[in-house]
Each structure stands twice: as structure tokens, then as C-alpha cells.
Length: 96
Image (cartoon, rainbow, N blue to C red; front, side, top):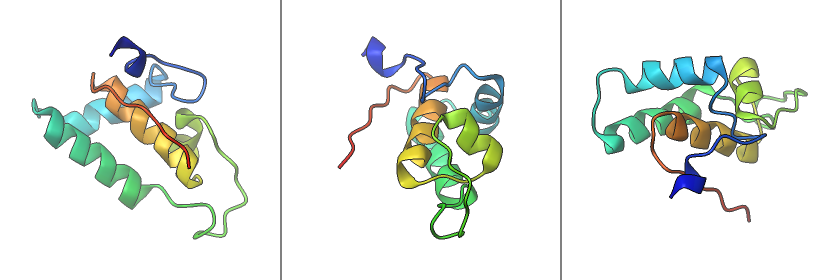
């Protein structure tokens, strides 16, 4: 499971801003399920999809997505995985 907790080029959960948002979302929750739900809802509700927003900004790293508040679905997935991993919740990706 360790590989699903690592920081990487695109799932850069050790970035200070990613860690700050991850901690804010977790708040005083101790349940991984509750934290995962908050992280998912944050990405779903607060991060715009580039196409839907007619945004020309192209992001890939979780920290870039967070800074720009926009990204294609794969980039949003990077942010979600980073937020989960920052909260010690193993997360993996599968692209289709």
C-alpha cells in the first residue's frame, strides 16, 4: 500500500498548499470515509473542468490544479489523489 501513499511529479501531495487544503478539509474528522467524502466534494464542487469553464489554462500537477482552480478530469484526479494521500488515505489512478 506504500506506493499509493507516495508523492510523485503529478500527485505532489507534499506541496505546502496541497497539504494546507488537505488538513483544512480533514478538520477534526478521524474517519477516512468522511475525509475522503470531503476531499471528493471539494474537487467536484470547487475545481472547474477546463472544457466546461472554457478555460485555456492547462494544469496537470495537483498543486497546479489547486492554484488555478481548474483542470481536465485527469488533472482533477491528480488533485483528489493528492488530497487523499496527504491525509494518509491510499489512492491510485486508472485512466480510460
